[in-house]
Image (cartoon, rainbow, N blue to C red; front, top):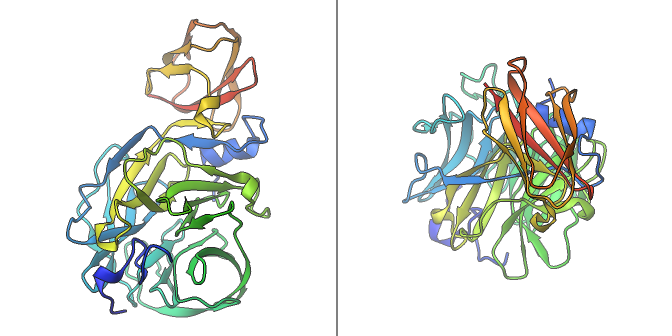
Length: 382
């Protein structure tokens, strides 16, 4: 696709701004550890630009983050062409390596991959393509064009599928900008099911399903305001995303105006997204956020003051309560099994917990205040 960079908005669209084994987090969701009808969301408390990848003279956009958060695929847009790039890091504490081009049989603008990174779906803005490879170290050498039925549009991008690859979500540009939910009707065809519902006067941008398919992370703006990140949630893959479970992503500062194209790791701990100040394609840069706290309320004003430190720890840590009510503290392993419980954390108390060296890895600390407000904090025991 030949394009003029100056005429593209932040999503690469022509025109103006008007137009396997379950993860620990999935286990938490399925076990409903917070015992609440509100959904459990990650609170992101650190954010940095991916300066090791961002190019000031080109667009860095449409990221896809691997389940373990160690590999990142993204679009590098320089001038009149786009290239899909891949970068890796040794651990989640490291920076990403210099990006290398991904060999694809067709030029695309935005890409989605299966969790094993063997299947890709990509859009060039006008068509949707599918490709497969036999290993994550090999190149994609063939592709097929996907037929999409039930809508007409001048531009679409941001394909995202569940892991069965039978449910497809697309960002569509038309009279209004919408997110289309589609279902597979053949080996290379999908039909429109519906458009995702949004609150009144809200316009979405390209989003992406979580790795377990239970969340759809999507940017949206109200009226003429710039875009922020939101999350649709559902209890199971057979449920529909509804406006009743549409909430802001917590902890992302508003300093960067236009936030779009979010992607998350398999436990939601890492979130990568694209951002720019003016919704310009060439201004797009990549940002990564990290969080290890889960809450059952989306309004930060409803949270309560309880902290757990140090984290990581050797298995000895302290829980500090600033709440005005007694709280219950419970530790759970990744299977959702209780390994410690204390029903009497008093206001202002500092409680020391010693796991005695019997627990290594990830532990979740569930905190419930006397009023019923709840938090779930992920702890690392080394």
